[in-house]
Image (cartoon, rainbow, N blue to C red; front, side, top):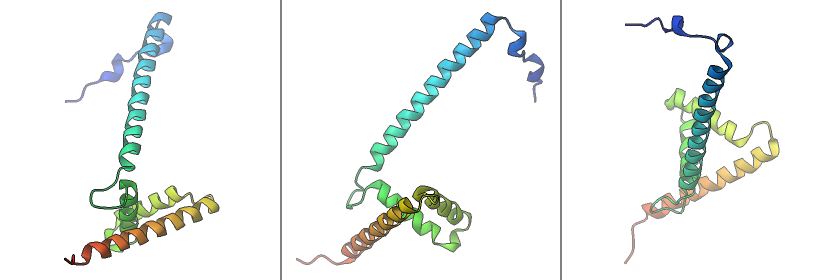
Length: 127
């Protein structure tokens, strides 16, 4: 059941200065709250990304990067591969060749570490 709420809307130009000021104040308070929540989430994500993955030498950021690259290189992933590829390109800064090469070198190093860890985990332990 749709309501016809647009008829009840009053533009700020037709409100008193006090009403417009109060609406603006409430909007500013809500904006500040949303900005703080977003900053807190960003800090939490940065903290979690730097944590080590259990039973691995990699951080979560490194593991996610490797996972994203694997998806991007797999044509069977369809749209997910395209999205991962675009995100990798955005992350490595396609517009800045020096930074792009640094990021590529870093990603190659991460892949080597991942392959080394996989080989070590697949070897049977000797007593």
